[in-house]
Image (cartoon, rainbow over the protein chains, first blue to last red):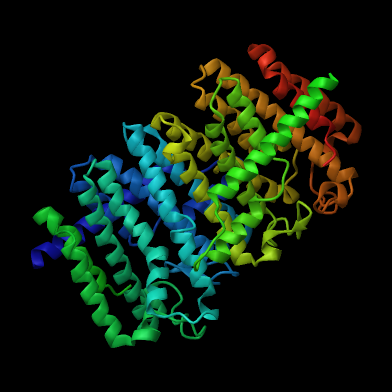
Length: 299
Length: 299
């Protein structure tokens, strides 16, 4: 399996660079009075991140032989939504985090008002990119991408998850509540990434559903590992402030399951995620390997 | 013209009630863990506002005999975007306003984090509504609505205008800069409202452009009158804090033109706005009358 790991690493690296390029193209260096706003948008989405979501979009799209430029535009839109959510998450009234991806959070580098507006503008731009004819020649496909991303990002998706997370320190959360919260907060956008490949590729509902199920499990794995890194890791490894969950007395997968059981759970879910891909045979090897990669990640 | 004024007042009132209904339908009273978030979203968009933007959407759509349910869904999407922008605008790090439409701003009634997330979720929901098949049977129309709203709301539209406005106290602004700022901040969304009618109605580019030009002028009139009300008005009349511009030393239409010239300018622009509608003949009477109504508004 060493060969496959190398393939995965290469593919992840390739997509990360391609995503950087398209984001730079979609957010050209600014001029004029909106300069500072657009600089803050660029600051937040360029030059960093694992680009896991873009990888999911591209790898899912490849299952259906979708042309890469289409997938990359969708990947860029997802990174805009993900990036805006990180900007807003880091604000003083939310997680109050000063460090993100090893550099100052957007509201520290700029100011809070600019950070809020940069997030708002990134969300709008994400939908503008999806709706543009360059993203797909069929309007049906574009409008379905918009609908799916909006649902994944909205009150019953990512933002809903954030809102539940905010209330977490004041509510007694059990495992099922944490799971639901994380499925909204992380899983919904992961789900969109994989669904986007299916939408771009005119997949049948069965394959589309298999990809969503994979992505939901993968999102949980990702979040459990995030909690593990937070409980054990160093800020240098994570590129952001860690050890934030315990002081707040917040329920996490770790506080409920303990470290060992959480680690086991992540491994089980990763295998379960990969099994959803059986329908695609060997063509889904990279996505299957990714689940193992996410379990083993260190940052 | 008394008869027409009555027609306009009736039409405005009708659209306001219909908009309230559809917003309530699209944002059903919540249950479950996202309850507080959705309550905050409802708080921000229900039960108030002049619903001027919905009126523009509906009146523009009527020029092309578009079925009302389509226009109202677009109107609801616009109000979600407008409402989210007000929530974020009122935050302490932005305008720091505690009063909005005669009641506590969302971040006062709830809290800052919930207010930010409610705004974020409203923006996502707006695009979900536009992309849904119920908004129009043609995907081409829906995707064009999404593209146009995203452009009007994004970094080169409403949010760009807010960013320039934020920088205003620190920058020497002349009349052309203020005009551009307001054209982005208010005019872009007004422009979308009228353009949306044209998009829904498959209008030719000439008519679509005429409506956009009308809306841009109307947006400026609206903003000049806003500045006049701020300079002269009472908080009770405006339903929000007034007299906010002068203490900050911020350049406004009034600080540059003075009250008398600003009032003249608003009247001239309102006439100019109405003239863009000549192409539609008497069918555009309500929109033409609206320009006069906006000049004369007291809140």
